Every structure is written in C-alpha cells, then in structure tokens.
Length: 318
Image (tube, rainbow, N blue to C red):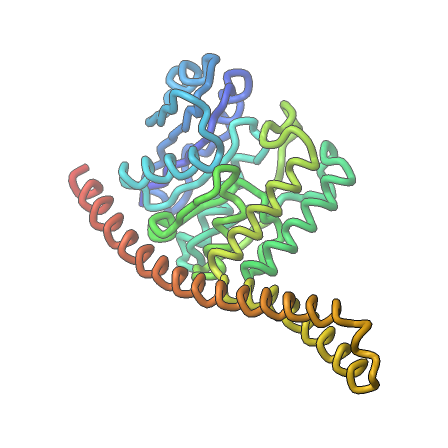
C-alpha cells in the first residue's frame, strides 16, 4: 500500500520545510510513503527547499494557475506514480501532520473513499468571528447541495483512495474543496469526516484577498456545481416560482375582469404572461440541462475507465 502526500505550493520557501518536517514517515498499514509538491509558479526558492528536504516528486507550473488546477495536476502525478492513497495538505503547516494517520485509516479499513479533516473552527484563535460564521454557513450550504454530512467543507486536509481520485473532476478555477464534495455526494462516493488539529498561523491565507471575495467565489462555486449535478431540480425550482407568480397575477386579473374592472389591470395580464412564459422556458432549459448532465455522466464513466487503464498500466510498469 503506497501513500503519496501532496502539497500545493506558491512562494512557500519560508514555511514549506516546517510543514514537510511534520509529515509522517511511517503509518501502520502503509508500506511506502512518498512526498510530492505542486509548484504553482513560485518565484522564490520553494522548489529548492523541497528538493533539499528530499521530496520525491515536483510538479512544475511556469505561471500561477490556481489551487484547483494545482490540485488536479497533483492527483494526476500521484496516480501515475502508483499511489493507492493520496493525502492533500497545505504548505503553511496549517494542519497537524500527525493527523494524516486519522485521515487514511477509514480508507485502509475500506470504510470510505474520501476522508476530510474537520478543523476545530470555533476554537481556532486566528479565525475572526465573521470567518467562523461564514465557514459554518458555507459548510451547511455544501451539505445541502451534496446531501452529505461533512461539517467542514472548506478544509483542504483530506485523503482520497485511488479509485476516488480517478473519478474526480474539478471544472472551476478557484478551489477544489467545495466542488469535489458536491460531486462526491451527488455520485454517492463514500465520504467520512474525522476531527483533526491545527497549528498556529505562520502567515495569512492567500486563497482570497477579502472576506467578500471569498464568500462571492464560494457561493458561485456551490451554485455552479449544483447546476451541473442537479440541473433539473435547479431550473425547475426557478421556473416553478416564476410560473406560479405569473399564474397568481393571471388569477388576480381574471377576478378583476369578472367584476367588470379588468380594463384598469391590463398590465397585470401582460406581466402574468411574461412570467409564465419565462417559467415555462426555464423549465425547458432544465430538461435540456438534465439531458446534458446525463451525457456528462456517461463521459465521466468513460473517462474513469480510460484513466484506470492508463494509471494501472503505469503502476504495473513501475
């Protein structure tokens, strides 16, 4: 059983060695542990620090391409190098490296394919009260969208089985954390959450420049993922509201018309017609989107089998 721990990096020369030193060298049930960094266009000595420390693999981007692209490139490299389990952690030493054993244990015991570390958000001193509330709200929204019970959706400290990693697709360019949970929940992958510890803050987060930007990007990611995986429910919900509003206005006009006062409420009839037409068209869009989603599921299945053949062949060659 081979574990590869991947660490996305962007200008992390000051903190990377600290994080690497805290990673485990041995875990019961794991035969081999290797280390990989994703250099996301760093302009400092991040790669030099990683190589001097002794990481096994380096994935290099010439320019900064973002956390989501780096995460997927790391998964691809881990799979190609024969990983049976992949753990993702941060280069700023946010997460306690000793807790990686907690992450991989449910996968080793075949209880889960994805395990996500639950941070003690309310007890984290460097999280502001607003950030704590937003973290809880964001996780609740993801639980609703994914039909899962993951309490800390934004956590980047997580483990994937080989099979789960081959099934993942991240289409947004912001972050992988929310979309992968929604995808896993909607495709019924086995997910678990385990409590983990965090370390004192070494630097400020670089994932977002402001709290408003974080909320905006996160909500766009959640809504977009929900549209992708449950388009019929999404568009029919909107279409039903529009159609119902139009129908109520139409009934209101008919009441006035029956009492002989319809001439003064023609605008209501026009607005009712527009709203009902919009609702109907939105429902049609939902049906078309559902057909596209069904085709996407077929393509994802084809992609999974192609990946499996490709990665398994490379694993056998190694």
